[in-house]
Every structure is written in structure tokens, then in C-alpha cells.
Length: 218
Image (tube, rainbow, N blue to C red; front, side, top):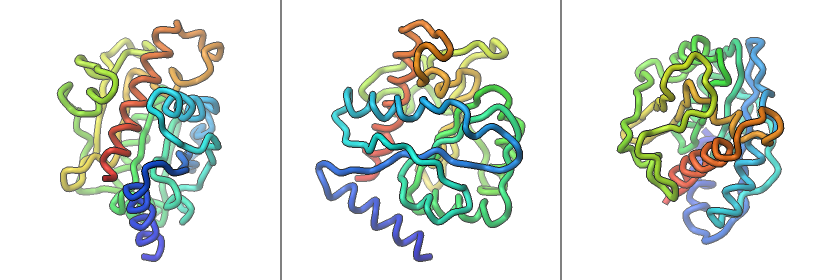
């Protein structure tokens, strides 16, 4: 409960200050999946948001255990990986309390996480299911306009890029990009040799998500 109240206080502080220093974090999970994939992704997103949105996000991006009370120090948690992801009952409760208290989770399918992510998140929100967000959703229409939804960064199985959400009492608490891999697109350009245009689109879509989340703190 103390951690939940602390998160509420943190978010109230964000709303009260014109500028502040806060951090995005990468979530460490169990199960054997490579949570550590894309090490340059979130730092590059932070840099882009600071430069293009005039934000003041701390450029240090910590790694935090899903079951730790430390997650309540960060308004945004990021998950990526290719393989298995599991939550213990305690970890699922901790993540649920974080999300109910105002936190936000972004998940980027680095190709292969889908079949593991969905049952893991069912432990967190057994009453919710991922729903595909319509192209009219505000996440696609912040500073950068994406009238056709998520940009297609990587081919994977050649399926259309999809943006899924978990919505709790009208609030988007988790955004999941599938069949596109925004996280790979955020990485240093030479890591995947993506064309500059795709790298830019991935960062722009990520910036939209960040802008949407922090505007919602008001």
C-alpha cells in the first residue's frame, strides 16, 4: 500500500511541475526470455523525446525487477524480448498495483514474445483482454500523425502491424506493439541497418506514446 500511495504522489508531482526529472525503466522478468534485448532502444527514445518534445526525462534508463517495489519510482516500464516471460503471483500483484496506481507498461514484441506475454498478463489482469486500438485512438495522433496506425518497422511474419491495449476503467494501462517491433526501430541505426525513415518513424511513434502517457498524468 505504501508503494501504491507513493506512486500516486509521484504522479501528482508530475502534474504540478512544468519541468521535472523522471525516468523510464526496462522491466526484468523471469522465464528465460531475453528481457535485456535492445539495450540502446529506450535510451534513444528518451533522447528523441527530450530533443523533439522538449521533455526533461533522465537519460539514465535503469533495469528493474518486476516484483520489486522500485517499479513504483518509474511512470513508464518497458518490456521486450523474443522468448518466455513468466510472472509469479507476487510479481503479478506488484505489476497490477503499479498499473492501477497510474503506471504505464509498453511491450514491444521482438518476435516470439506473443504466446508468452498474453498468459503472463492474464495473471496481472484476469478480467481484461488485449484489444486492438482503432486508428482513431489518440496514441496515433499526438505530435506525429499516424492515420493508419503503427508503422511497419520489421517484417517478422509479414502480418500487418497491430497496436493492442489493456484498458482499465477507460485508461490505457498497457500498449503492446505486435508485428512491427518499435523497440528494434529505436535502437542505434547500425544495429539492424534499418533505413533512416523507418528508424525515424519508430521513434516518432514512441514519442507519441510517451506524450500520450504524460499528458494523461494531468
